[in-house]
Image (cartoon, rainbow, N blue to C red; front, side):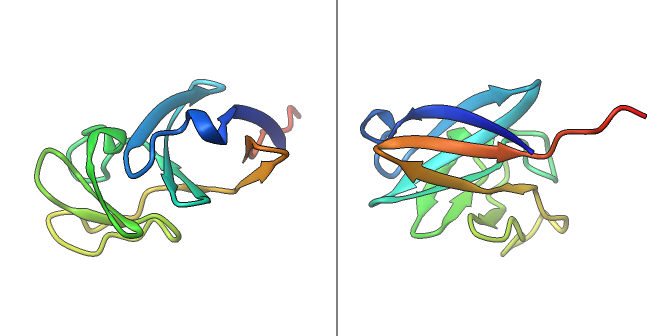
Length: 107
């Protein structure tokens, strides 16, 4: 598993998304109070950036068609999306946001 520093907690906007690319993977990072969540940045319905969506508690609404995704599970909570988006483990260590990304092992 790859461990990547994303940002300082104080650099993350409260209640808004931030798009980061980790190893070529677009990820939407959200700060809700002192909690940080990371999900795949692309809506499973229409390929819109979820980092640009509006945040409601622990859900983000896709800016294109309004599908909502749970920040904890990646599951869609409303149509038109029916497929989940990936969720990535994150933690805050000494004020720094660290993301964990699965890495493929070469065979």
